Image (cartoon, rainbow, N blue to C red; front, side, top):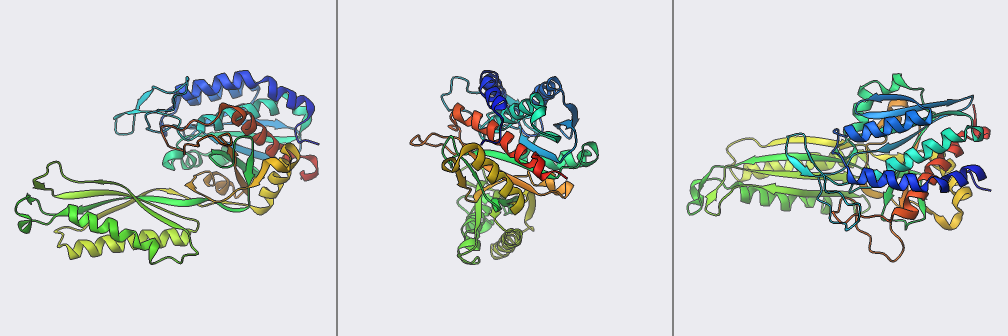
Amino acid sequence: MTVLSASMSAALQEQTAWQESLLKDFHRHPELSMREERTRGVIAGQLAGYGYEVHELGGGVVGVLANGEGRTVLFRADIDGLPVREDSGLDYASTATQADGEDVEQPTMHACGHDFHLTAGLGAAKLLADHRQDWSGTYLALFQPGEEKAAGARSMVEAGLVDAVPAPDVCLGQHVLTDPVAGKVAVASGPVMSTAASARIVVHGAGSHGSMPHLGVDPVVLAAAIVTRLQTLVARELSPADFGVVTVGSLQAGSSANIIPGSATMLVNFRAYDEDILGRLIAGAERVVRAECETARSPREPEIAVYDRYPLTANDESAAEVVREGFLAQFGPERVEVMAPVTASEDFSIVPDAFAAPYCYWGVGGYAEGREAYPNHSPLWSPDLQPTLRVGTEAATAAVLAHLSTDRMG
């Protein structure tokens, strides 16, 4: 026996055409974090058409559908694109550009599957609205901006989300991933996505002619020493049993081969499955930077600014078990896997934490078995349209219904 009724399952198949068309439209028109005006307007219009009470706040949209007595369940989908130039070869590939927060025109792409997330979220919203006889309670369809900058969940909470909608008993979300394979889902309790933060580090030198390095302080050599030393924070300061990553994703200095510049700028990313370990990595990086600057005779203190902080995503055991049971009933055991922890990060948990509600976040397979799987954020990112979209819609609906089922009411 499946979680979705026969009529709801039939409707899921019947709405394939409009969902595919809508996804392609979203994919052709991606928008950068916290600048998703067109996307937000389309979502609000769709939800209103389904009969939801629509709230726009903090750059996002949340639809409320009250349907009698029962629990309140929130499902969240993120909606922003990335500053990536698409090279996927898809016939609906993005050629869009958009000005970023510094007014620099950027190529823009849905390179992380958020077009799938929001289209599946709308598909689930319609199924639940059209089949109210199959469930009782209140459903919150939340569409969040700015996930890629860890800004959108906070912006919605700061804009009054908690006071604007009924408090959910549980919050749910999902992500298209390279593992499992398309057609399958994966869920687990405990940590499933890492906590993360980034830092902008500026170290200062003293400019000089390239032929006279002894008369200056070379920030390039200083930065190179820092890059090398930062790797020891994981390799020599963390237990081999603990997970941590320190990545220097950008190092910029100078403009000429024969000029020693005055400064160097590094962008560094930290990740862990434990908030304490993340804190140790960030503190260790600051210690390394200051020590290397002193050793190099840097004339000024370094500038260290931490930003884009992501919380740990750790699923509630009970909420995850309800989702797992729903998936087993809907998909069968051969299509439900245990989700291995993902090293990427999410700001999803900020929403349930604001409500003090338990949550579950799971993975949906995006690439057929045997097909080369390009990673999230790649310009080649191109999940299979189907069955990914259908399974994402089905999984969202099944998880919601599992938590709304009458034996869990009250």
